[in-house]
Image (tube, rainbow, N blue to C red; front, side, top):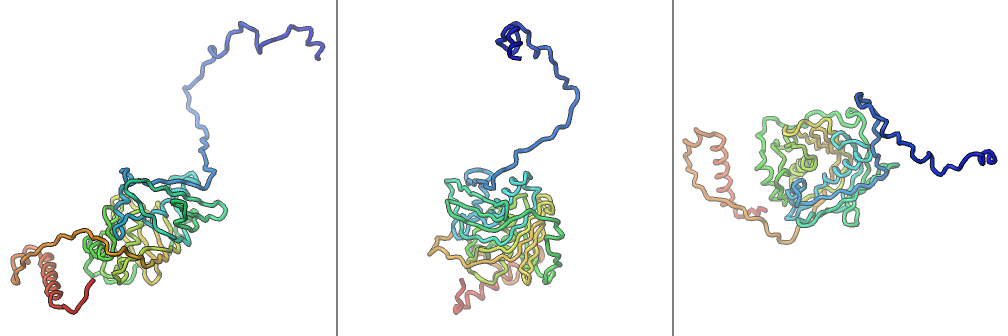
Length: 335
């Protein structure tokens, strides 16, 4: 064949010089639409870096998680970071990804500065599902995570907790006044407990579409029921189920239930089991924010106010009675 090729002139180009191009003679027909497969870019790494910056409007709400005068990153924020990472690894949206976290240990707290961003490195191992969240080169949280199955198989079938439904409800101001005395200076969306019974077994939580403060108020609901004035922070979590599909639309109050015999907190699409708290060391002589109060004369015979607003009359009478009691009980040392 090589000898036959010598009979033809050598071709220096794929086509002869002067051959017109075909591109100008080809026209594409776009009149019909066709469905084609879309192959997304699957994540090939189990690591995800997430940054929070209080100077940004979307992250400024973290500043409301003030504990003992310092802004700490919420424990439930780590759970949200892991949930976002699982959604990324499985090519899903976070609001469509139900997960189960188990054996979660909060090893240390993270102080969030006001003038610098905080970066978290979330690592999830595909083979075992174990994860860790690192900040500043050290591990903050560890545990295991997996995609959730059917909600009926993942959640406990619990009834209403023991309690007296006739109890007068505690409202937001009452609850967070007590929390402030313990060292929890919550503000903004983290004041999410709308109401609670006196046993702290049933109540309502605010829900605005933000998972971090919503789940944090669930943890608060468990803390407020502890009969102490000490400062406690969550250090371990046996199991957590987060199912976005069972969550109501934003703006709807969500019923919360605390089953203390089982150590289970449920609200909407979230179930927390075995939340363990540890006593936190408080700062020595912190300067508290000033509390503005006033002196008001309340007559003993207050018929006019009682006729107009009976609830206010009861509240004023109780306030005066307690004030007189405290003034004459000098032997009591109240903290």
